[in-house]
Amino acid sequence: GERSILHITSDFGYGERGAGADIPPNADLVFDVELLKINGKKLISQAEYDDFQKRLEGWKSSKLEKYDSDSTFKEKRDKKHGSREGYEKWLGEQVSKDLEAAKGLIKK
Image 1 (tube, rainbow, N blue to C red):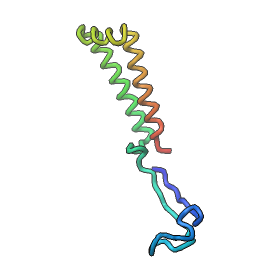
Image 2: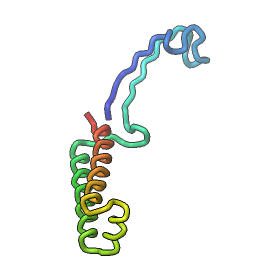
Image 3: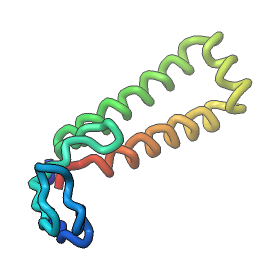
Image 4: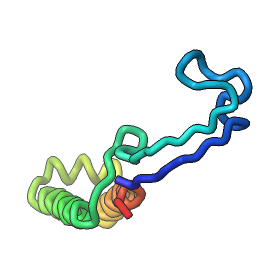
């Protein structure tokens, strides 16, 4: 993941009071940090993102195939989305939403 060195001056750290025996008064702090996850989600490579996109498109295609071949499934989706076009639009929105969320997790 993304790695950085953080320099915290004492006035933004523990200041004159310090922190017990471990951090003396007026000590500047240096942290070596690596970002591994954002809100519990790990960072992904561009290749992983591309694979995720292919899997989402496959999911959308499989749902449309089921819609076209299963009258009970079609009837339930038509009640909720009005028509095949409405259902396909909803599926596309779900794919777009998931891809947009995943974009923020791509390692740079």
